[in-house]
Length: 429
Image 1 (cartoon, rainbow, N blue to C red):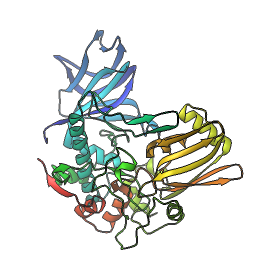
Image 2 (cartoon, rainbow, N blue to C red):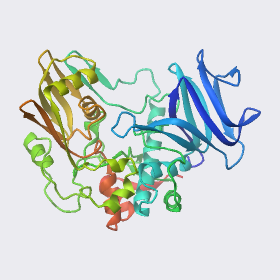
Image 3 (cartoon, helix red, strand yellow):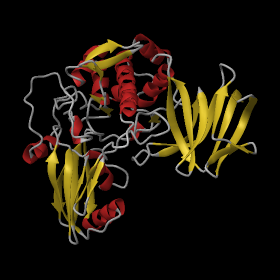
Image 4 (tube, one colour):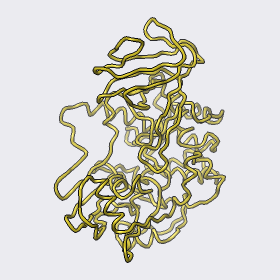
């Protein structure tokens, strides 16, 4: 696997403009500088000719390419466009009536970028090593899962009826590349984010290392901030659970673990600020894990959102593309181990609808996405107040908690075994 490449989908459009910095080959042709590829009749067209697919391969070691107006944080509150730089090859393919730009590069080079994009390149060595192992584990496990699911009868991710809309957003919808470059998979921004020698050191010192459980590579999920308690896998995705992705305190003490599946316990939990690795306001630590645009989010451990009844009703109608009438109640029906809601009933004057899982709830109740689904609901005179905790799904490694652990002197293997209990580190190449 060490010499294999990963295919990363970067952006899509009817026309894609980019710049080749250095010489690239397209078949036997050489080219460089500004380029433009357009979609026409189901094919990418460039230089007056249409192709089944179009591949630009670097012809010199120092060549790189620049893609313009790449959207990052798609549909999340930090969404923005930026120009990005990449090494490796660039492939333009036609899919779904438009073009997609795919970056092809070695797995270990991909990981150098991922941990510089997910974290700060100036994070501690132990934190970067931990993230290199889980990013490698997640990538390879996803590729292998996709290979195993190449069938005509794979189950649907969604159940949609008149009374229910429940499902999850998986990664197997990327048919022509392995992973995307945004938070839907894991952040990959090429060489746009400045790397450092310590990033390369973290990847090299963990080369080939993955998390294993019962001989299989772990599906090593991670999120920004668990809010003090880890979530189990099935709250957010398929109705299966892994022993290494379970609910537990994000803390080294022996404090009792409340049952946050119960409404009263969940309310008490989000109304408090319990001891937790991720309960920190230390700017030096946060700068290790939060890139510049992430640092705009300051209230991640505990947060609050308020809507008038009309605002919420219009928002729900827009996000669901369905009119429930004026929203009367939001009723949590099922919670996970961290208090995150996986099934929510929206009671409207015209009709009632149950929605889930975790990410769909976050999507429907926000113009972008709520920080998490670990919230409780209070009615005010003219509306609703959602009070919650955490940022992201809370499954697996908590990036802010891991940054604190690294700051406190924990080694990368200790960080990993805290967040993935029962797993172990092994080398596959």
